[in-house]
Length: 218
Image: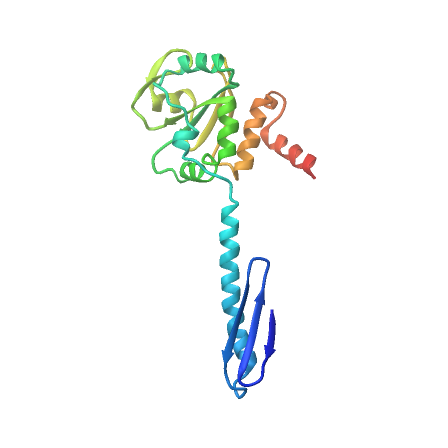
């Protein structure tokens, strides 16, 4: 920022930044303090700079897509059939997202994690993905071909008591990994998927896997 005086009663202030420059002349007599004018203009310039910075940061944010369309797969509710589809498509298994209405953490996952394009690409590549309402009375078929309601599949068969629960099932319909609650970030959710794809759950816990992963990055 440069402040200069010119002859007469004009004060010239020029503001420079990486994204813009702005100049203005003020018609004030020297009986008024130039520093007061400078401070007033500085405040306005800082507000303008922060607005430009915010808009720039937003433009570089990770692209998002509606998870209902781009993350979850459609199904008629026959998970024994979906298991065969997963095998035929070369997937690693099936992911079940147990949820319920008015679940704030479920909503958070959908608006902060499951809507991320890189998350959708990774999980769609490796899993068939379905949502199950833990309070649902809709009939479905489990991985063994038994007909039951969604809530019985959640409560009786998988002991889901809180939501969300992210459950991974292998190609034999056996639950391989279960994560209760929301992840801290999209990065942690991707790490959870990697943990299952690499079958690390056979040898270690996810918490230990996360710690070793962080240590490798340092």
